[in-house]
Picture 1 (cartoon, rainbow, N blue to C red):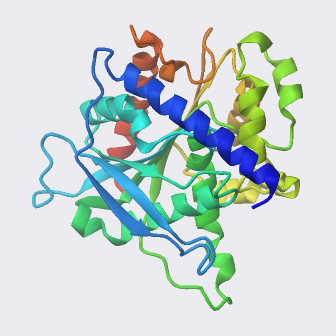
Picture 2 (picture 1 turned 180 degrees about the vertical axis):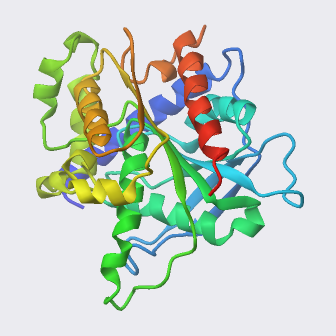
Length: 332
């Protein structure tokens, strides 16, 4: 590891500890976020055999009436935020609580591996392997692999799009030695909160174009995120990093035809690319529920306030759950 890589790692570890402390303080705010039901680990490697294979943990949150002997449940597979550098699968426990109360789904949050130790495309590969693991072991987990919804926040919201794009690309490997048939699965919905969608555009120009540049994530963090996750600038145009760079046919084939929820923050530097991506998907015939959440910053729902939770978080979580509930009611 080079000197610069060590410097990035030291910075990342520092910010991870600060982030963890902040979420711990925020966990005391009423209503208290729920605890996960159990954790399972699995070994990755399908999308990069012998390369970056490792262990990924899945945090399960089960509905109160969970009875896999009686029925198989839809599943919401969630990816946390943190610039691919910070964060934990339990950061979205409040979102998990709303999903459990307003849908019939099992909620699974993915602890994918973080940069700079594991730069692009490891997070996307881990996300793909998590989906495949859950589908392949659906009987054990009591889930219906034909009713999978993907959800995420910020970097995790990027994964909610890039994971299906990478999964769809698997058929391109049919002639390779590591190719094998994938388990049956169907992604029926995507819920994406304030995603990063375009690494081709620099942070400075995004910040300058924002309605409130003073409210955006500071460069000390965005520089860390981008240098950690995307050390090779040539990867920025990959559709598995920048969904906005994906060709039309890839988006048409990989993403669900309807039930795509995209929720962006008005005072976020990522607002413009989110709106542009929603409009593009609609032009391709996708049914998209797009909302600009007014007068809020990136990560508004995770603001580490020891006294309160932004009421808009509950409002838009519930709005997203309406979309999920509708998707889960459609026959697969």
